[in-house]
Image 1 (tube, one colour):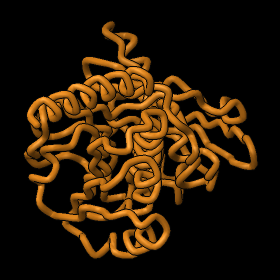
Image 2 (cartoon, helix red, strand yellow):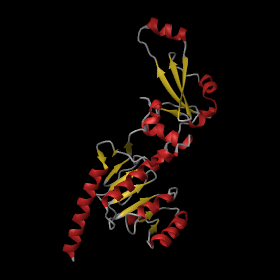
Image 3 (cartoon, one colour):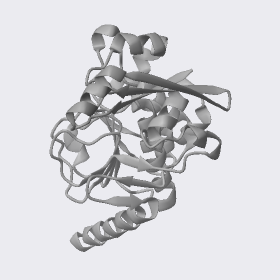
Image 4 (cartoon, one colour):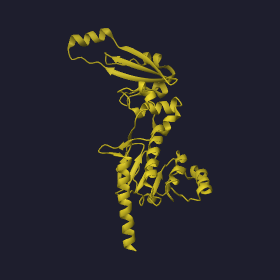
Length: 285
């Protein structure tokens, strides 16, 4: 069973209503919804007093406390073992699927592409990239993690990979997949497009997209709520409820704080700059 927590703070300005709220006290409401053999408990805490009784909540949430679905604004008491569900694994799938789908539509084998994976935790995406582009760059601090994939790729495709920990190799790339948070200054080109799993914590060149939208599969719509995004709910179903079919979802759009793009619009942009670069290279020769 999965558990989702919503905190509803009920505040009143009038003194007598504040007093009435304190008399009534806080209340916990629960509802269990079952879909496709998955049960999800929705816990709503009506906070009338301004103080949350986490021990009382703990008795309702139980062993789900260490991967609890909840809003980022909720401050969970770590001393009691509460931890918000981390959607990183599913974000990696969505970002990878979107990136690879774009490559499949572009059909530009000579496009300069890079995988930025400092910890080397997502090596399995590399064969899918090689399927559509030649000689991609892989930037990582964990080079040995890629050895197995690179050997298999060479045996199957005869393709070579530029495997390096040198960030300067990113400077010539036009399309980058970042499967870790960008928290360091990277030598990116001004016209580069980066598909990432999160918003960079530092200023970077080019444009980075990190939020994804998609149609939640119809069979899971009963879990949908205004409190949680479809991405977050599907991530929990994929990661914690073994609904692995959700791992094949290809996002409809990617966005950042100022713009939203589709696969088609990014393809159009990359084709334009790729063709422009090729013309400039021929002119220089």
